[in-house]
Amino acid sequence: MQAPQEALTFPLRQAALLHPNKVAVVEPEAGGREWTYAVLEDQSSALAGSLAGLGIKPGDRVALWMKNSVEYILSFYGILKAGAIVAPASTHYLEREVAHQLQVTDAAGIITTEERLAQAPQIKAGAFGLRFVISDKTEDASANGKISFSSLFAGKARVDRSVEGDRSDSLAVLPFSSGTTGLPKGVMLTHSNLLHNLYQVVQAHEVTSNDILLNQLPFFHIYGMTVLMGASIMAGATQVVASRFRPVDEFLSLFQKYRPTLFFTVPLILQEFCHYPGISNMDWGALRYVNTGGAPLSPDLQARFTDLTGVPVIQGYGLTESSPTTHVTPLDRIKLGSIGAPLSLTEHRIVDPITYEEMPNGEVGELWVRGPQVMKGYYNDPTATADTLVDGWLRTGDLAREDEDGYVFVVDRLKELIKCKGFQVAPAEIEHVLLGHQDVLDAAVIGEPHSELGETPVAYVVRRGGSAISPEAIIEYTASGMAKYKRLSKVIFTDAIPRSPSGKILRRVIKEKHVNDGF
Image 1 (tube, helix red, strand yellow):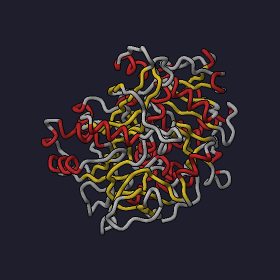
Image 2: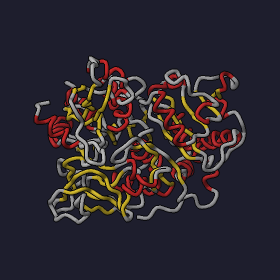
Image 3: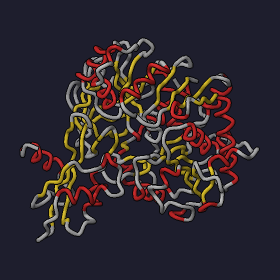
Image 4: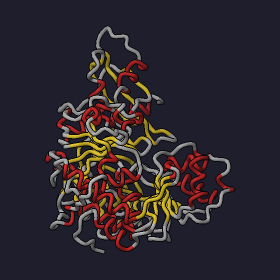
């Protein structure tokens, strides 16, 4: 399988050509309104025309900060058609985090909502280099320097610069990831990276135009962006778009009403389903299978959902740096606890993380992957790029083993990243905030296993002499201006933080002490 050298807008153009009057998107939260592929194609080109009128040029970065909605989809493809690069921001982010991302990417503008802006009053035209702010509920284009989202469709201009020349190797999306260590950084994903992965995902997951997907995972996250939103459009399928999980009984009612055939989710939501008393009495006949990703899936949970519903559960694997998917479990040969085998055109190695020598079959080493979906590198960060990409191989930072059938099992995390509710939490980011407190002399953050959330951040803190600050006060201090999933679950005071001669935190030493002390 070889993807054509097209732009990332190709799947939408193709779907509009093949299925112009087919329902592409259904929004239950907007009264069940429906959008056809022809309308998505036309309106995203209109949005691109308005962005061009605002001075957006090929290669400019435009931030996209909103929940799942048809407006998100139109904005995503409209930015690409204007020739610009989508810089998605997490809706869990607060002002400090979004401001950092705007500055790092040198964003020319932002498309967002009044709900988001209410949490970030400093984000306005002229601040952080922004030339414009587009908001969903601003009717007066001159009000506070904001532009109404609805006004973007008022003009007659239709633009699609993405079809001009070969754009396959140019940047398409700039999502943020913490990589294996450090603060979040922009991941340079090209049109070719993402389009290849769409072909790979649609092939591996056997998605067709007859499918109905219930898409709830956030589109700002690479999993939701590619595997949910993108794959639906690539296949010409119908996606039922939800912006939040909501109470479990409410969410499960969507399965009864819309009868989805595919559901891509995370283990935490699958666990919520299994706890729901009425799950085994529901009609699951339309659902072909469930795929989980974003966090490790326990074999027990995988088997339990199938026992309760009769629906098979498979597990995939990927990273932001790989667009994201690299491995998927074959539907006809499911092994509990495995992430499956590499996708087409994708290779993997399991190597000693110190010597880089390949490990014998069955032994644990670091998982490396290589394929056309692997990123170009980190934005303006050649050092981090060199640390993560080795001769074209992407170091995942996960420890894994391969069995005799070529199936991969992830067994531990080599990298320092904490995975909470499927989201990445960089210890260094929280440590940076902690060290800004006048009563904190030194600090280190580790992940503590959690039965439902995967992991939660825990801080070891050295207080300045004479300070009586409480753990609760430190937790509240770090929570200010940060996403809720990054909130510390506990603070433990210590006399010193173990560090290497070069000053690097010896996180594994802290983790061993944490376990030995009975936490």
